[in-house]
Amino acid sequence: MIEAVVFDIGNVLIEWQPERFYDAAIGPEARAAMFAEVDLHGMNDAIDRGGDFQGTIHATAERYPRWRAEIRLWHANWIDMASPVIPRSVRLMRALRARGVPVFALTNFGIGSFAYARTRYDFLDEFDRTWVSGHMGVIKPDPQIYALAEADCGLGPGALLFTDDRADNIAAAAARGWQVHQFLGPEGWAARLVAEGLLNEREAQ
Image 1 (tube, rainbow, N blue to C red):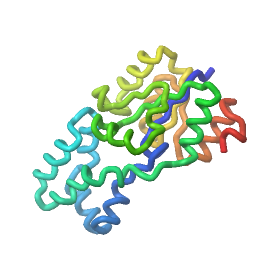
Image 2: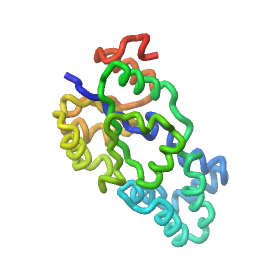
Image 3: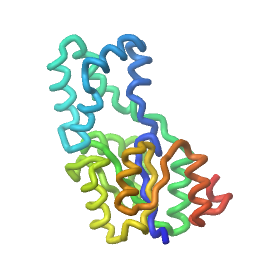
Image 4: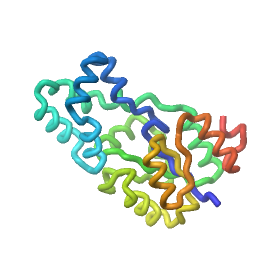
């Protein structure tokens, strides 16, 4: 029986599309060249493991002087990459809480970037438990992050229903026995919550 619902944040509650931001900022050709030369997602993974938000980005920028100004935008314009909100997902999270269903967050997020996001998105303070990779020192899909979440909440894997947009994160949770849903949009997630009896059709709108 499901006893708690676990949300990823990026591309589930908030869109996270750095490439889209850079396409608009510097053009698709320059963006493609920069991303081919610089492992920006690897840089972000280092932040999500607990690295300093600004320091990690600026150090990377110094290693690639050709792209120094553009890489620094990852910090200066970060909130433009982590937007907009996915409104129906937020409504679903709040509907679950209104029904008395415990709602947790398990997210790959840096310490500094998550603190910043909380100043812009009030719903990030509404979870019953929030597991942020930067504070945990490990990122999804490492099995350790799921084990730490289980230990903290005290629920068995089968009692947790987890949604995430990334197939590898979902697979790692499923391998531990979590119930899972790959998030491809709020419509499918709403239907799953109704199918599980956690919300009715009206509440899932």
